[in-house]
Image 1 (cartoon, one colour):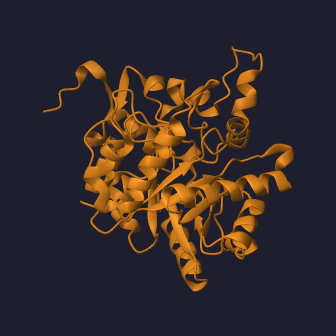
Image 2 (cartoon, helix red, strand yellow; image 1 turned 45 degrees about the vertical axis):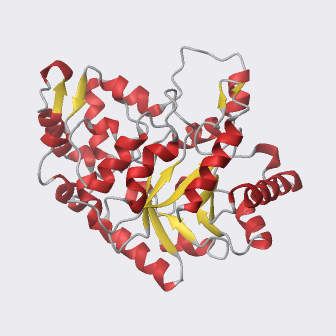
Length: 351
C-alpha cells in the first residue's frame, strides 16, 4: 500500500564514495519528504559525528553539507538540526555550550537560509533555543524515552513536539493516547519507524553515552575484546535472533496505520549504507528484500549468511504484534515467524 499521505523525515549524510550526493539520492521521493534532519560537523549527537572518521576530519564536509541543505530548503523541505547527544559532559549547563549552540544556529541562518526545528535530548539546549529563537520548533529526541502523557507535561513548556518512545510504536492504544494528548496541548507527535535497537535494551544508555563521547573514546587505548553493543552481543547467538522481530520497527507495508496519529515518520538514514533503499521502501509502502537492510542498525553481518525475507513474513504480523500482551518471554510467535522468513543467501531466487 503506497503511503500517499504520510510525511517522512530523512537523515542527512555526506555524498557517497561514488560521488552521489544526498540530494540526488532522495530527489525521486521529495514529494514524500517533509523534513531533513542533520547534525553539526564534528559535534556529538545520537550517532557518530559527521565529517569525522576515527579522528580523520573531512574539512570540506561543512561546505558540502551547507550547499546541499540550502538546495534542499529551496525545495520547500524543512531542516531540523540535531543537538541530541545523550551527554555533554561538564559543559551540560554551561555558557560555553549555550554560546556554541546559538552560534551554530546563527551561522545556519546565514548560510542555508535558516532552520525550522531543533531536536534535542537536553532541556538546557531546549530552553536556550526557546529564549533566543522562539520561531524555531523544538522537538524532544526519541532518546528521551517519552512514553506517557506525564512525560509530555513535565517539559511541555520547552518542547513543541515529541518523539514517542520507540518501544511503544506497536502499542496503538498508547500511540492514540499520546497523539490525542499532543493535539489537546497544541503539540505534535512523531515516531521513528526503523530502529533496529532491541526493545527496552538494558545497554541503551551506556551505548548512547559512548556515542556522545565517541571523539574522546577513540583517542583512548581501548580493550578490543569487549563488545560494547548489547544488541550485537545478544543477536550473535542464534537462539536469540527471533528477538529482532520483537523490536520497535514497523514495516513499510504497515506505516499507513499511523496516518492521523503522528505528524511524521522519522527514517534513520544518517549512517545507513543505502538510504535511498529505505526511503523508497517506506514511500512506496512495500519492500521485497532483507528486513535487516531497512533498519539502523541492521545486523546484516550478524545474521550472515542468512537474511529475513520480508515477503515471507506472516500476513498477520502487524495485527499480532500490535495486539499481543507484550509478554515475549511467554510466547513463541516471533520465533515461529523467523523460522519461516529466515533464508540462507544462496537459496534466494528473487524474480
